[in-house]
Length: 138
Image 1 (cartoon, one colour):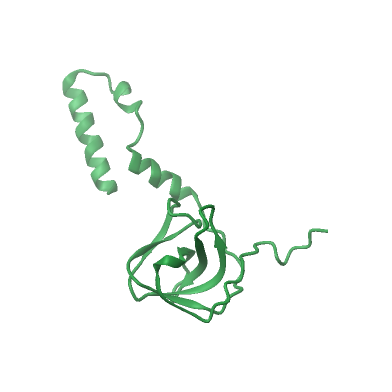
Image 2 (cartoon, rainbow, N blue to C red):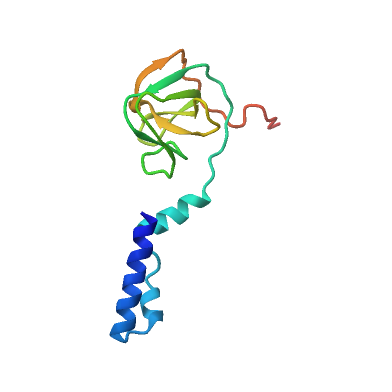
C-alpha cells in the first residue's frame, strides 16, 4: 500500500509541476490518511505483560493481532486460521468485549486478540491483566 501512496504522490507532484501550482501548496495537505495511520502506528510499541495464564487458543480465520485491546488499534501482525496464540492475561475493553494478551506460538510476537476470533480455547481461567502486580505501591 505504501508503494501505491508514493506513486500517487509522484503523479500529483508531476501534475502540479505541469499545472504551474507552486509545490508548497501541494505538499501542505500532508501524507494520505493511510500513510498517516502507518506513521502513527510505527511509533507505538506493545507493552509486554505478565504471563498469568496457561491457556491457548486456535484462530478460526485471519485476524490482526493488535497493539491494544480495541478493534481500531494498530496492528502488530496478521494471524492465519489454525495458528495458536498462547494466552498471558485478559481484559474487557471499553465496549465490554473480552480480549486476550498473548504470544504467537513459535515466535516472540506479542499482542491483543478478541475472544470472538478463536474457534477453540483451551485451559484458561481468564486471569485479569495486572501490569503492576509485582510492584510495591506502598
